Length: 304
Image (cartoon, rainbow, N blue to C red; front, side):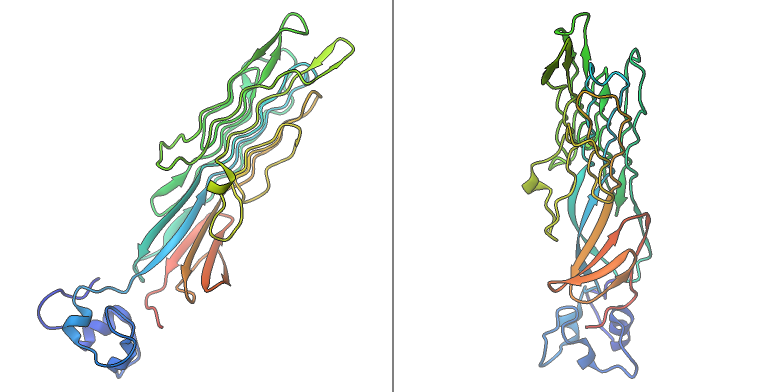
């Protein structure tokens, strides 16, 4: 807890807050609280109301949405999965404040290979990721003969053949930013696409692309791009721990694909100040990356 803001400040109170090795010397606390890096230390002026805290920057990405599949893929288009919600945030942590739960959202499942006459089916949304009371919503699943799901980013809508092979019903993409955050955590999914190829009497359709933010808005501080919406024609599972939506296939029979799992990354300046996740150092920062659910624990005392 912070040191008192009035009255007497003791070396014992400073040691209880900032740590150190007994017998305590004031020189141990250069750079702590409001102390200078060298020279005279004044207990009241340099320590009133101070606490042993540090600032973090962190990224939360929800699991990506799954892509729809169909046994009638040469006539009906299947929507791709939307990206997981992308949220870049900051916080001030107090050492010794206890473990902080990290939850990593699963990638959204697919709907298998829906029969040619199945109606209103589609892939599943990704799971939410969370840390420090904040969440990134799972991406919306792609639709088959229906709209894409809403999510962190919306899933792509389906495309359904009508009575004639030139008469198609286009379904809408799902809405993004399901958490109603500012700034937005994701974009809207795209509607089912236009007929893109003709072969004999078949007109091949495709589903909509999964939603995402602009690339510049989902490139985090470590230079990596996260939360990419599923492509149409890519037909791939979303990469693990990216929050990427699954890609769908144009115009062929296919089982759907699974969205990428989410991720939480914490970074702060300087040497390691806590435990949890995979710990790395780069460019003067320490990173904790959580690829699965766990706990981040700020260490009791920080030593400079």
